[in-house]
Structure formats: C-alpha cells, structure tokens
Length: 70
Image (tube, rainbow, N blue to C red):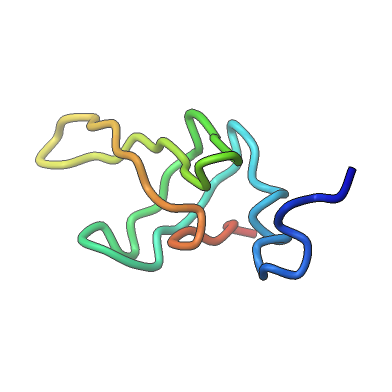
C-alpha cells in the first residue's frame, strides 16, 4: 500500500505526534507555540491548546500551518 501523501509535500508533517512542540505559521494564531494534543493525519489536522487572555483554548489547525519547534 502506497502512502497517499507521498510526493504531496507533507512528509515533514508525518513526524508531528502528540506532545510535539509546534509553531503555527498561518491563520489568526500565527506565531503561537503549543504542544500537540491530538493528530488526525487522515484529515491533515492537529489539535493544540493555546493561551488566549489567560485561558487555555483548544484549537484545530491544518498540518500545513504548523512547523515543528526544534
């Protein structure tokens, strides 16, 4: 079985797992940093918890809008 993402430019996102620290690179939460709470590689989405006005808020972000923090 061939990986449906092969050659689609998302091989780096396959390394993102629960607990991985990521930085958001697109959308209204650009430059927020958060550990990954959940990953859905089928939909190409990750769930993160970001601090907004002192409250932890869970958000759903596209895998293409996050990069791994090293």
